[in-house]
Image (cartoon, rainbow, N blue to C red):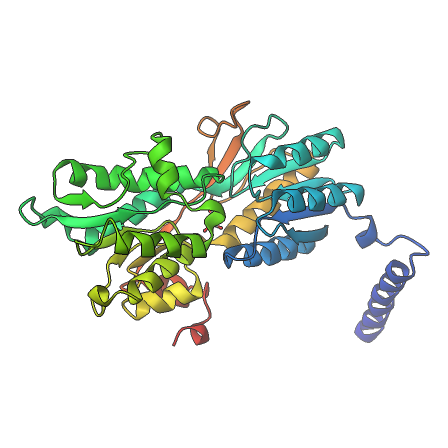
Amino acid sequence: MKKMMCLVLGLLIIGSFAFAGGGAQQSTSSQAALIGLAMPETHVERWVQDGANLKAEAEAKGYRAEVAFGNADQNQQNQQIDSFLTNGAKLLIIGSVNEGVISAVANAARDNAIVIAYDRLITGSGDYNYYITFDNFKVGQFQGMGIEAGLDLKNATSANPKYITLFAGSPTDNNAFYFFDGAMDILNPYIDAGVLNVVGPYPRTSVDRSAFMQIATENWMPNIAKARMENLLSNAAANVTLDAVLAPNDTLARAILEACDADAKYNGKLPVVSGQDAEVASVQSIKDGRQYMTVFKDTRALARGAIILADALLKGQTPNVPGARLDTTTYNTGVKTVQSYLLEPVIVTRDNYQQILITSGAIDASLIR
Ligand code: BGC
C-alpha cells in the first residue's frame, strides 16, 4: 500500500514538472508570483550571498525569483528592475546603487508592484513603504568601540595622545552616514578630551557634509580608499605614526591595510583598523592579527526576514518579521517615513570570531586557515 502511494505521488510530481516544462498546462510553480531581486554590486562579497539567499528563501516559499546585480551602476540596475516589471514581477526587493533608482521605483508603483528597500534606504521616493536593514547606527558604534578597545582609549592621556585617520563609505549610500555617525558617537568624546587626534579631514558628524565628502569613498571602491590612504601616508600623516584608521567596511579595511603594508613605518605595527561584513578575507586578517575588528550582520537572517515580509505583503497580511525591531519613525526618505525592520549586528574581534562566525556556521571552518 505504502509503495503504491509512493508511486502515485511520484507520478504526480513528475507530471507537474512535465506540464511546467512543456508549458501545455500551467503548474503551480509557473503560476507563482515573481519576485525581482535587484542587488547593487558584486565587488563587495556580501551582495553575492544576499542575492543567492534571497532567491533560495523566495523559492522555498513557492515564489519564482530572479536576481540581478547592478555593477555599481544605477542605469544598469534600473534596466534590470524594468525588465523584472516587464516579466510581471509582483514585488521587488532592491538594494539600490544610489538615489537614481527612484525612477524605477516609480515604474514599480505604476505597475502596482510592491517595493521593499533592502539594506539601503531609497531616499527621495514616496513610492514605497517598507525597508529592512540592520541597526546601522549601532554598526558604526561597534566600529568606534572596536577602536576604543584596540587603542585602550579609556586609559589614554592627552600627554600621550593617539592618532587616527577617518574613512567613510559611499556618499550615495544612506547607510554610510549612519555608520560614520555611530562611530563618531563613540570617538568624539576622546577627540574632545585631546586623547585622540585626527590626522586629515575631521567631520565631527556626517552633517558636516563638505568634510565628510573628503573622507567618503565613492561606490565603496577599494582602489579609491587605497589611493587616499597612500596619499595620507605620504602627506598629512607623513610625520606621525597612525594608531588607528576608521574603515567603514571590510573591503575598504583591507585596501587601507595594503597601503600601510607598503610603508616601512608600519612593518610589524599596523594601525588598529575597523571593518564590517565579516568577509572571509577579513576574518582571516583578524585571525592573523592584521585587521582589528569587523561587524557581523547576518545577511542570511536579513534575506529570510525580507522574504517573510514580502510573503505577508503579497498575501495582504500584516507582516511580522521574527527577530526584527519595527521602527516606524526613524527612516524618512525625504518624502515620507517608511516602515522599517531592523536586525541586530554583532561586534567581532579575534576573541570571539570562532564562536560568532565559525561555530554558528556563518563561515565554513575550511575557509579560514
Ligand atoms: C552595506 C554594507 C556594505 C556596503 C558596501 C552598505 O550599504 O550595508 O554591508 O559593506 O554597503 O557594499
